[in-house]
Image 1 (tube, rainbow, N blue to C red):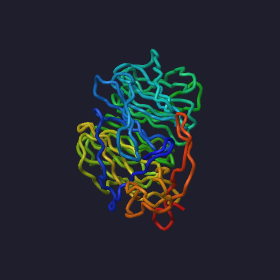
Image 2: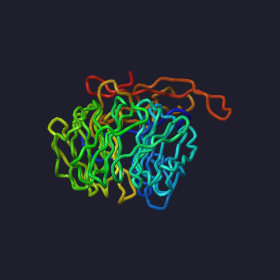
Image 3: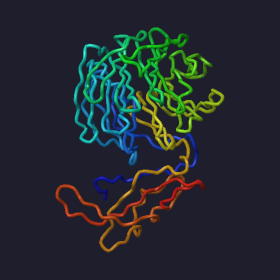
Image 4: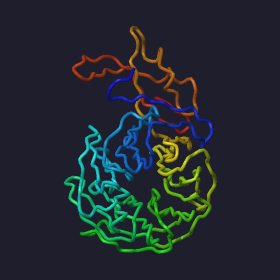
Length: 386
């Protein structure tokens, strides 16, 4: 039995990296995925043209746990860094939904600058949400506190957008003009300071964790690498199939690229070369990697599912979600721990590392003892609970 406020951990005993270890159903044309900052759940937009829903997915149990009604035809979604809010671009409705993540309550934001809003990125300080307007050749800048909106002119048919880790620049993929606009987010008002040409049908953007590279996915089957220090193209990587979702591992050594066909490409950022291909997807679109670097999540637009890829063990010191269960009468913690709390790559660990804690139950309950543990990854390459 789960206890409110604590998450059940469900880990797949994967032995090989870059292996699909789970397929999650319950979506309607899943498109873009964003993982909450606490890592316990993700929001997935359902881009089915006429619908208006966003699915809530538990990363612990790999299940859809709820549905949120937003505007028509949602596409991009992004969280504020503190996880308090998420912003969703509703392309069909021409609105942006602001979601209070503690209640999943929705506040619609409307503005004359919205025109087929598509991509969303939130500044690292959480003060602004940037939304590309595919039908208006602009980026709307939303004050996350007041919902006031200003706009910046960019190239034709902007789609993807990403912000550098220092928060100083936003990179915008302009599909129609084959360019990338670089917005100075520190200026008042925000302005485009550089326009980079040579990215045919640019549609998605991802920026490396160190901020030195921007990867631009284009539907001419290439990923263009931009050196952000000079805002020049350093190389163009071929061998993709309409690449869209792009995400870097936390250490920045690899990038995973979702191909609209049926594969995910693995790219070495040191050589800017494709080093591996993972099969088994259906019109892969959005792709995101967990903060621990353990799993990648891929939206299968053509199969109404999300695939979970085990991409490798996390860095030492990374913690997994808190785990909890209610012991039976007369039991001690760990005595009969459920089998579903095994850790990645390690079997028969369900009875180890537990300690007792008192938890106040909701709705006026009196509370009682629960068994809890906080797994973390050690320097010796194993999971432990301390």
